[in-house]
Image (cartoon, rainbow, N blue to C red; front, side, top):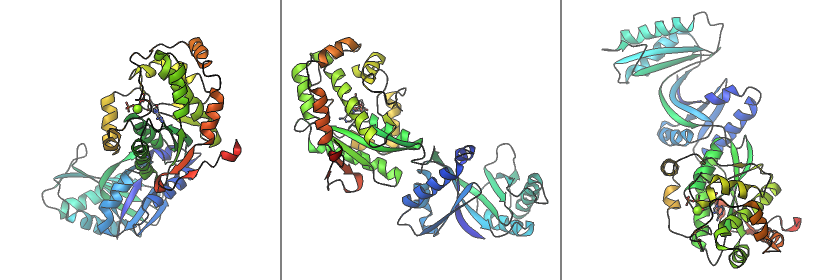
Length: 401
Ligand code: ATP
Ligand code: MG
């Protein structure tokens, strides 16, 4: 009888056509995330198994439970046959040190030719527990403990200790998206939620030195690093020099449209960077009605600049719910550091909440070279990887322009 961690990925099992790719991706991701821990991971018939020294169980369960695509992890036992007598012996050992008053045994047969039905196995093994443990009762409706038994053609598994995990899809199976990552609370949460649906992320940050500081920028890279820790791999961050465009906007555009036009420029640049990096969608932290630029009117006028779909995972969340998630995923403490973002400098007193598209066109003519400025910003953008963000390298796309 071998003690191990048993991983369930329930939702993946419904993805019949792509299941192989899903499982291979999950396996690869988990291997990366458990890097540095001496363990063996294998998969077989809808389960993944991790064999590791018991002293690492706590650490492994912590990592596994935060790995996208995993529904539940259990501490269990693998028997190298499905002999009923061996299972009887094993269930006595498994339950010996467990504390409970009520229980039930639930059996699942992966091996359909097994001579006994699931119910018969549960009854027999339940009887063994009753006989060998004092003061316990069966309760099929509301047991304190469920002892699971899984029967395979040449193996069986017994487990009773389960830990819930984040669920979702393995990081990367949905293709790539570009996260507009600011230093706020919302966009890291939006990124996390997209990652949870299998979206592989790159990030884009609009940097406006000297109006915004190095600290503000490092804070964004740090937020990307926290997201990267859930991916198990570095995340690429595109840092866009936005100062010139922003200054042109403030010089030329009437006050109430400043933010609308600025965000239209951000969208244009983001879509171009996404396209060049094979990102299929933009992801951002907009939430309906949170600020003037996030009313439905504003969102539609801003969105009009691009054809690419925009995913807004927190669009319908209350701020308090977003904060809750930010705390859980450990981005909150970094997000609340007080460095100014380019959206929070030169904020007009009365930004428009129902901008008009024709007016945007008129105002954008006041910056006749804005398309050149956009190309220049893209040309001069820097790519930073989260695992070594001090060693910047120049944009690899320079020669494409
Ligand atoms: P909060 O401080 O409420 O978390 P936020 O930064 O999410 O705010 P806004 O400043 O209105 O809210 O921006 C909306 C979205 O636009 C952000 O969630 C982010 O996706 C994107 N965004 C804003 N500023 C930048 C920036 N400097 N670089 C990249 N993306 C940005
Ligand atoms: Mg912000």
